[in-house]
Image 1 (cartoon, rainbow, N blue to C red):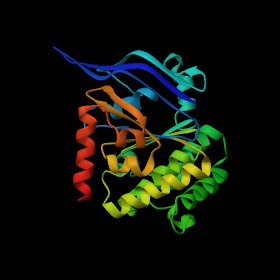
Image 2: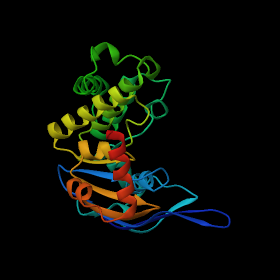
Image 3: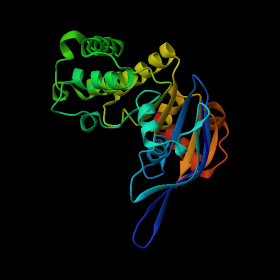
Length: 260
């Protein structure tokens, strides 16, 4: 489904170049949950934005390929990419409050994406938006759809973002640390929801996090990033049981400390 080959994305400053993503390669199979693991600044989010072609100056995708269903996304026109973003590949961001527009109801925001990508009339798009809120277990979706983002808790806003991401039935969902701003109990609920949705829709998922515990609970395979480069990759079980890189060993040691 997705094959990333030698992806390289730099950010240019006056007197230096930040190699945010440096020659990164990995693949995602249909129905797979791949974890991208690394500390802040390791390049995780830049990979996600590069896949969706959301890199803007002073950033630049320098080289590489992002092959999605046989097409290199880096070679497509912006018009073609607009048809892919949100329709074929969707993204759930870390902070739902800044991602949702505070002056529009959640129904308006979900329905807008449906109308844009699926060509439905407003009533049909709203009906589908209600169905999506129900899918992510928001109670009384028919009335809550008329509410504004500030009327939802952090966990509920993240559920709205997941509903919006799924509304056009994408094949690939990128989740960029979607539980970081939530407390532990709500984190667990969102992770369980993602598992449920992935199985229900047979989605491929890229889950970005700095938390090895989440990778262990959610993902089948993992790549470990350090300073923009892949330092380890494999099944979660293999990487946990026999890490080869010193940085990965330190991350696993932190996980073991948290258990005690």
